[in-house]
Image 1 (cartoon, helix red, strand yellow):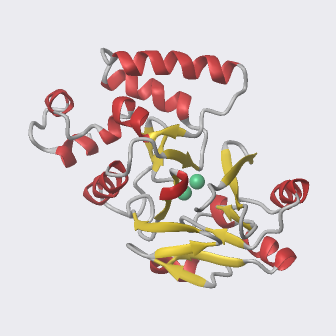
Image 2 (cartoon, protein in one colour; image 1 turned 135 degrees about the horizontal axis):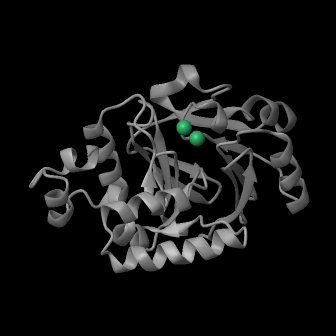
Image 3 (cartoon, helix red, strand yellow; image 1 turned 120 degrees about the horizontal axis):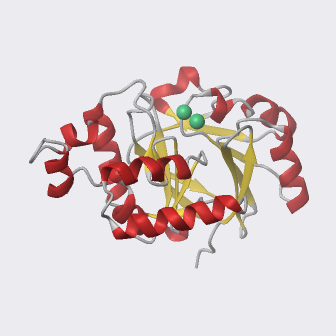
Length: 248
Ligand code: ZN
Ligand code: FE
């Protein structure tokens, strides 16, 4: 039987989360989206873990800025999106939609999720119920559509929406409180949302991280995953049109 990943969240820069993931059987240790190097190397050392992999979701510097320094310090392998190979510093292994990447005794299924950037990918560790989705899906929000179209982004989010509800969403930024405020303007009557927003405010008051959440919670409270719901489409003035509702 495969053992679950151990996940450590490392807050860096203003609001980024970098993840150290450790697979206990093989002792494989990965860094998801290292913005920077020093705090990550230090955190791994504290755990007694040797970094063997970097997993990048997209090319933005706040996700890859630590790549070269961590690789130089550890000799780790850098895994990243095939579609963005030229923009991922130090990339060794290129992955894309439908690929299974073996991480020690664990496996990640790769999804192409273009929209925020054209080459953005997400890693789903089904056995560990863990989704590393970078800047595509946030708690109660989603990434800004920089390089793709709204139709692409909606399609990408729809892929993530199809994963099991118990999946934990490990996104790359603490944007939850601002996202909740926006979500409440879209669905002021959504009771799950009202309750969750209050809980988030209390957590932030205490300086706690609101990440990860589960997909089950996102289905109920994230307006960007709910553009296919008739009430939201009606409110957006686009009945029957999920893409137009999402864009709105
Ligand atoms: Zn980004
Ligand atoms: Fe980012």
